[in-house]
Image (cartoon, rainbow, N blue to C red; front, side):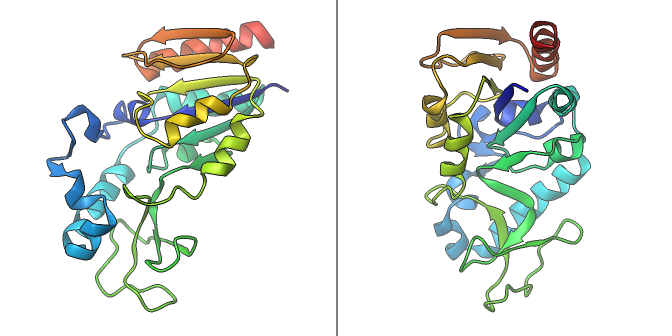
Length: 230
C-alpha cells in the first residue's frame, strides 16, 4: 500500500468557515498576533488570550468537515494516509482520518503551562479561570505559540521521509519550521500542491499542481490517485 503523506494548512479549514490570520495582514479575527499568540501575551494578559482561544474553540466546534477533509479520510481505504497539519482544529479527525499529527497543537485540548506534554480534554468550549493542571497552574490552550518549540517536528520529518506520495494542501509554505518538512520528502516521491495560489515547492522529480480550492482540488487528486494506483 502506497504511503500518502499530506501537509495541510489553513486553506483547507477556511472552506469550513475558519479564518486564517495570514490573509489579513497579520490579524486574526481582528486581533494582533503578538497580543494573543505568544508566550509573552499569555504572561502579559492571560484573560485576553484565554478569551480569544475560547472564542476560536467555539467556532471550531460549530464548524463541519468539508469535502476536502472527507476525501482525505476516504483515501485510507486504498492508501496508507498520514496527515500532518498546521491547523489547530479537529476537522480531519471528525472527517474520519485516523492518522493525524498536529504540529501546532489542537484547540480542543488544554495543557499545563509547565509541561506542554501534559494535556487534558476540554468539556464544552471554554477553559475557565481557576481550572488548573496537576502542577497547580492555570490551564492554557494546547496550542504552539509563536516563539515556542514545535514538539512534533522530528516525528513529522520522519513521516515525510517515508512518503511515496506527498501532498501540500492549503498552505503557502510560509510558516517555519513546518515549511521545511518538504525538504525531507524523497526526490522520487510524487508531489502534489493544491491551493488557490500555488506556492513554490523545492526538489522532487514529479510535481503536479492543482490551482483550486481544497474542496475541489483534493477531490480531483483523490480521483487521480485511485485511477493511477488502484
